[in-house]
Length: 237
Image 1 (cartoon, rainbow, N blue to C red):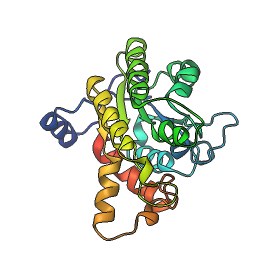
Image 2 (image 1 turned 30 degrees about the vertical axis):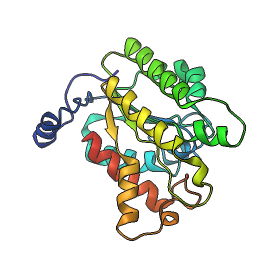
Image 3 (image 1 turned 135 degrees about the horizontal axis):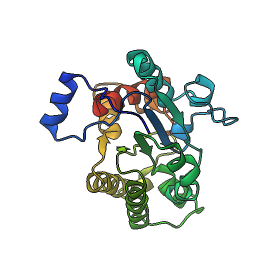
Image 4 (image 1 turned 60 degrees about the vertical axis):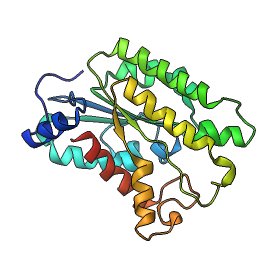
């Protein structure tokens, strides 16, 4: 895990204090890890699991964020990993968590998970209920906190846009799962990244849902850029 030395400037620290947001534990030699499903994976090259390289970070929001962090905090010598895997649900994260999370000892752990937990259920490939999602996610974070007590948790809001594969049968269950994700984040003391809120605001401002995610699930280039902006604003680094 990283050495001492906070990356937050005074303005960011003040903002964190005002919102009671957890302070980001990131300093010299800091490690940032992105976890999740295909939205996080974004076609990354998994050979060698290369951090800090575009091929290893994929084409999605992690590479946008990584580029900004490495540019803005060049003095810290950060290491940014992407270990998202397409198709993953919470139980899949659990199975690979030791190697793909705990062994990396991240200072900042960002997780976006949940859309496959409902999508695969609707497709008849999974039978997990919203409660299974909530309880499994909560247990994963509880176990991670026990192993990595100093790590800053970032829980990203699962999101969908009403187009493409996203039909009326996704609701209201998707909203229940989204609410459970926020509940889990709060109980774990995690920073919450409001992706659904920001996409909803963007659509309300006049753009079509498909502009942000053609199939309603996987973001476009613009969608990933909006996610990166939202993440950095929420996390404060």
